[in-house]
Each structure stands twice: as structure tokens, then as C-alpha cells.
Image 1: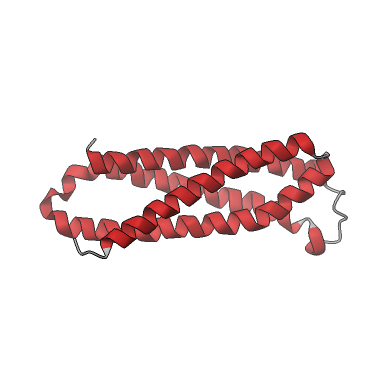
Image 2: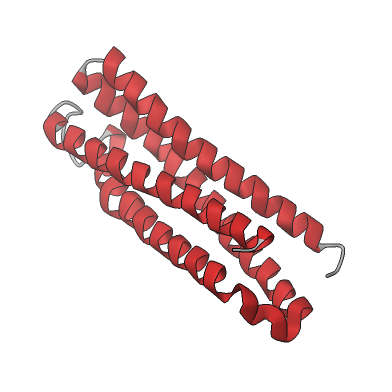
Length: 167
């Protein structure tokens, strides 16, 4: 494989580290904020954090998908007919990544947008404390979805390592 694939793999590993680290940090941060802040303030702070967190994770996932596809294309060309030998771990990894993308789409677009659009200057005419119970329910759903995405991310890393070392 050409020398440039080192940098593709490097970006892929960096993206995976940033993704898993950010998802785990977000989970820990929300637990800490929930214990320390009153519910109204917790909901507002979480909405502000989600406005940064979701685009950051989306960029990380985009880097992972693009670099993974690029590296996989080169690997297929380099392995030739032997590429079929890695079909099972590769299929498991790609299936896990597909489930992760579905979970992240749900977290970002079904839950995150409902949380962030109902607060702040674009709060649809509602004061920030008007929908605290609804916002807390959305945050709970985001936390659960985030945990599932973290587990799927760790599983994808495991299958990636299985691809490298043999399954």
C-alpha cells in the first residue's frame, strides 16, 4: 500500500479516539452536572453543551467513515482475491458502524434539535423554564442514546482490532 495510507490510518485512529473520548466525557459531564445544578439550570447548560457536542461528534464520525472507506479501498486493492478472508469481521464492523450512524442520527436530529431549538434566543417564544420537564426527558433520552453509541463505538473498535489481528 502507498505511504500515504499511514496518514489515512493515523487520521482514522485519531478520529476514533476523539469520538470515544468525547462520548465518554459527555456522559460523565452530564452525570456531574445533574448532581450539582438545579433542574432548570441543568437543562439550560446541557442544551448549550449539546450545541457544541453534536457537531463535534458529527465531524468525528465523518472523518471515521471517510478515512475508513479510503483505507478499505486501498486494502482491497492490495489484498486482491484474499480480501474475502476478512469478510466476517469486516461485515460485523460495518454493521456496527451502520447501527452507530442510526443511533447518532436519532440522537442528533430527533432529540438534540428538539432540545436546542426550544431554548435560548430562538426559543420559539417560550421562556427557558417553561418546558423544563420536557427538556429533562429529552436529556434523559440523549443520555441513554449516547451510552448505546458509546458501546457501539467500543464494539466497532474491537472489530477493527479483530480485522488487524485476525478473528
